[in-house]
Amino acid sequence: MARIVLGIGTSHTPLLSLDPSAWHNRAKADYENPRLTLADGRSVTYAQLVALRGEPYASAATPETFVALSDRCQKHLDHLAAEIAQARPDLVVIVGDDQAELYTPGNIPAFAIFCGDEIATHPYGGPLPAWRQPVAEAYAMDKVHRFPASADFARRIVESLIDQSIDVTIATDVPEPEKFGFGHAFGFPIKRLFGGRSIPILPVMLNTYFPPNVPTAARCLEIGRALRTAIEAVPGGLNVAVLASGGLSHFVVEEELDRMVIDNLGQADGGALGSIPREALLQGSSEILNWVVTAGVVSHLPLRYTAYEPLRRTPAGTGVGAAFAVWKP
Image 1 (tube, rainbow, N blue to C red):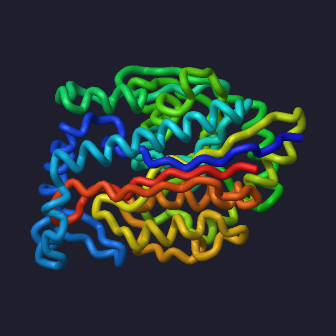
Image 2: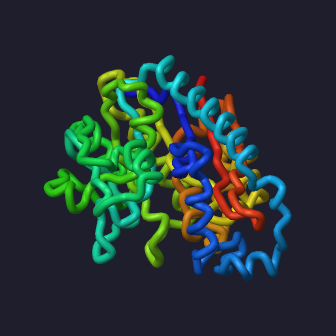
Image 3: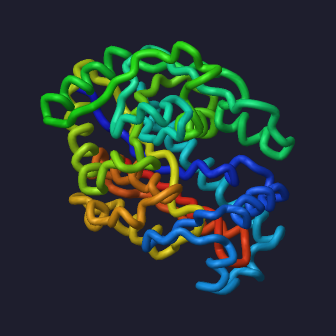
């Protein structure tokens, strides 16, 4: 039977693929964003955020700090890549969210698994500013890229999930990747963490971003546990890694929320992860649900490594809570 040999969690913010001298370009979007979401569910403008919290990070949102943060994040990513290289998985399950890259707003499944033998990424449309080109390349969204998957493994997983009363949508091909294809949640870990190795993946797609059919945190834990049962029932002796892509809080860094998530990743029963309220999981912060699913899958493995870097790129504290984790025997 298949064996889960490794769990990985990684953020995939563009800041991880940009030279720190370009981080200010992402900050501009925060200043103009009319819906910066807080952990209590409120959406505010940057000016309203300043009125609420002031600008306590003015001395930290500097080019010098950005360089130090970037250096630390790249070391964390190098560590994750080394863990994957050492584990030598035969297949990697990637739990990620789709942001209108593969699915259209008119057709968004709550939970889907890709059941084909090859994925294709969707390139960003239109000309990109020069500073954003490295992000497109890091996400495998600079052009159509194709990566191996496993239809047989995926179908066995889907059959088991259905038997466990977990209803799941399937997709079997990407016929027009120039229009719709896999996006950043999948391209980033493949490009940054696989070390150029051709490792088949099982894409697990969770609708975290687009209400009303966003699964609850409790349901995500259940899905993760069912995925573990399904994976371990697949014959053939495959070594499988499971990877959460995305998060944590953004585009306002909510450090208390992020640290609660990290503190509970190693709990065999999921701890407080299944109780995270919906209002804390809106917009970018919703990608925490990818981590909740993964924690459910790998809850039998010890949590061996965690790192957290609050990447605040403006004086009021907008940015991303970047997190990195490793579960292994």
